[in-house]
Every structure is written in structure tokens, then in C-alpha cells.
Length: 346
Image 1 (cartoon, rainbow, N blue to C red):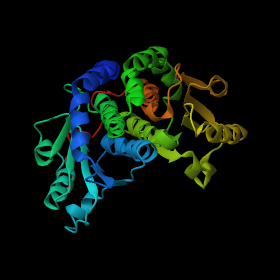
Image 2: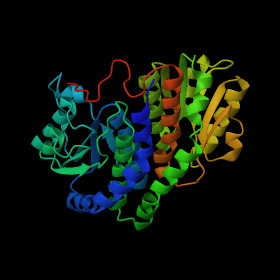
Image 3: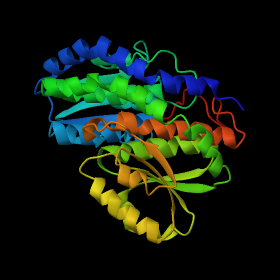
Image 4: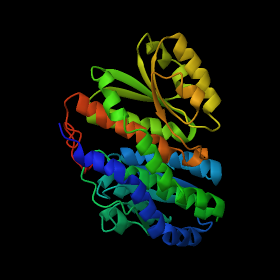
């Protein structure tokens, strides 16, 4: 049982985000100025954790910039060789390694069709970066643990920064620049969850629920749980969960709920009412004290922040919980079963 590498990288994230914002703000501002009004929507190609960052993009650009965001279907570009027409799109590839052929194929086709293209990657010398017209490097440094943590939050920061600069919104930029300190606070407040996870070492399945901006967080936390522990962890929107999957819940069924303050909080509180009636076992990530008091395990977010930046904080307790759960189950979080750091798909 190890985990020292993953533990270190989880705690590196506040500094990674600070370095990224300092290094890339001017580059991202320049990119958004050059893009101007050359596109009508974003088409994002990504896999794994990067795909979860793309889910965040659907909310941050849709809500704050009123821009539609579509998720690409890379198999159409590779296995089927039937790429769709991309008129009006800014084609974005998100990949920590920049190596996956299917993500590369989407960006290359976008450029062939004459659309603006952007790569968000931790490797500015990667094939993806070379294929795109514009590049936003993540500055996360080498990510040695197989499970992505700092490249995920850096990808969220890149998308949030791009959203701010598209509107030249200095107030939102100020909020974003204050996040590293809040991330440090969140990690400090949730250190104990690594040991608390021992309670769930025999768990075989669970559900992770979020909505709105933190729909992406639900997917990312469930991915971390599954890849690190081999537990079947399903992610849902709270709305979708009520449309059928809630039938699986009975006494003691474990549910991790991601519920920072914002527009969806009251909806999530209503879900907690229902889950309490079913006697579910609830782990809750929130800054709402009344909601945390109803959890079997409370994972606090001390600072209330605008909902659009909350995913950079809310994912951190989920990462720590996944690390602790893997260790409690006698697994090596640095080397998850059956996985490699760079996955190439077609």
C-alpha cells in the first residue's frame, strides 16, 4: 500500500492553479481576442477526466457566456470515418498528455474544415498541441500518479479563465485568482477523510450525485473511486437520479452528494429528505452547515464561493476520500489495477 505520489499531487493543486493563472492569463486573453466572434459554439473532444472537465465547460460557457458547448463523438472521426460538419465551431481538444489519436483526429479535422482550433494540454510539445492553432498549457508539471488530479483542476481553471477573458470580466478574474488559498483551506479541512474512508472498505458499490456546475464533479469523483478502488461508482445528476435509479437505494446504501451553495442547493436538500426516508448512508460535500449536519460523513467546504468556481474546491474532498478508500482496501493508489498513465484510443 503506497499512495505517496498521489497524496503529494493532490496537495500540489493550489500551487499548480496559482502558477497556471500567473503564467497563462495573458496568453488566454490573447487567444480570446484573436478568436473574437469567429465561432458560434464550442465543440470539445476529450476522454476520461478531461471529458469531465468538458462537462464543466458546458455550464461555465453556457451560463456565463451564453455559448452552446457540444461534446464531440470521436468515433465518428476515426472508426466510422464520417466526421460531421463543423461550421461555426471552435474545436477544442482537452488531454493531459496530448497523445490520444481520437482527440487528435477531431482537432485535425476541425482545422481541415477551416475552423479555429484550441488544445488544452499539460504537454505543449504533444501531437495535440502541434495540431491546434492555439494552445493553453496547463503548467501542472509531471503528473506521476496514474489517476489525474492536478491536470484535472488545471483544466477546469483553463476553461474558467477562458470564460472570464471572453467577456473581459475583471470581477470573475479576481474570484478565480483567489482560489488557490481556498483550495489550500479545503484540503486542510478534509485531511481526516483519508482515515474516515476506512469505514467504507467493504463497500461494493456507491452513487455520486451532483447537479449544475458540479455534475462534472460527480463524474470525476466517481471515476476516481472506480479507478483507485475497483468499486462500482455510478455518477448521476440529482434530477436523473429521481427518474429511476433511486430505486436501488435501501438502508445503508452509500451516496456521496456534492452540494455547494448555489442555484441547485435547494433541489439537493429535497433529495436528502428523500434519501433520509430511505435510510441511505450519506457522505456530503458542502459549505451548508445544516446540510452537513445530516450526513454520516461531512466533508466541509468552509468558504462560500460563486457556484461557477465551486468545482475546483468540491472535487478535492472526493480525491482525498478515493485515496483513503484505496489504502483502506489494501490497494496502491499510485498504480491502479489495469491502468497506465497515457491511454491511447481510436
